[in-house]
Image 1 (cartoon, rainbow, N blue to C red):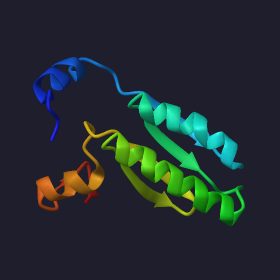
Image 2 (image 1 turned 180 degrees about the vertical axis):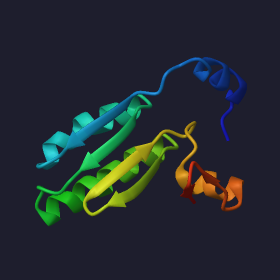
Image 3 (image 1 turned 90 degrees about the vertical axis):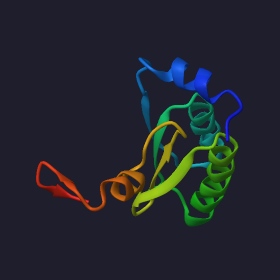
Image 4 (image 1 turned 30 degrees about the horizontal axis):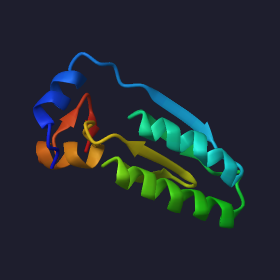
Length: 108
């Protein structure tokens, strides 16, 4: 999928994943979120105070930004989403690879 996957993997080894938490109330604020996605950061977006039509526009826009970066956009709670960079394994991926295993009494 990536032309330079080996070089990308080598560059990412030892790198620390940054997480950004954003509360978006108006569409203009989604540009900062997009910048964080483009920087390959894990981004949690809270849209609970945004009007429904604005929240929908923000999710549509961020879906496109995530797609362009091979990232994953997932809903994790009511009005809350997480954008995960392509090199980070998501919970759903972990569930599949573990076959329903559990860690520290937390079942998947």
